Length: 188
Image (cartoon, one colour):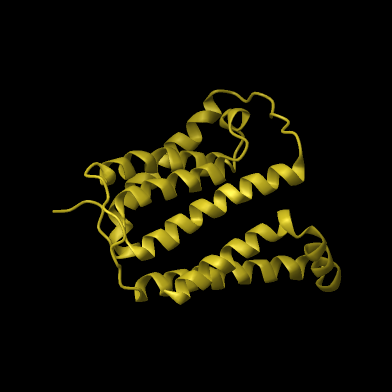
């Protein structure tokens, strides 16, 4: 469990530095240069993901709370909008006119869904940690950046891109989930 917690702390810390430790980030960029800083950031994220994967796989699940009988179905229902939000953050869409942080909102929705279906210790650390990080990141970015300036409207056809991509990724994840996490989504 310690490895999983370390991975989550490293992930969260690296991602929060730009919004909560701007002077520290600036001094790193000044001493390393921007390209080396980006390389260090990327390496930190890769290490954190590796720790999360190793920590997840090496931690025996210990039940902490009873999940609702509808929890698994709720997770399946929440994953598609989470993916659409996540994908929408990288392309021009009208979604960004209504949601300031679609990627972080997608992570939060994904985390909530998974907490509804998994009531054990390692899930609480991973999904609870990711959800908490997403909420904290939204708050700190809002504080750093100030008032939100909504983007201009985009053609409605552009809104279909994250939906189509989200459906495709959703389908892939339904079948790849046991290979990625060791946990089947679809039984039988």
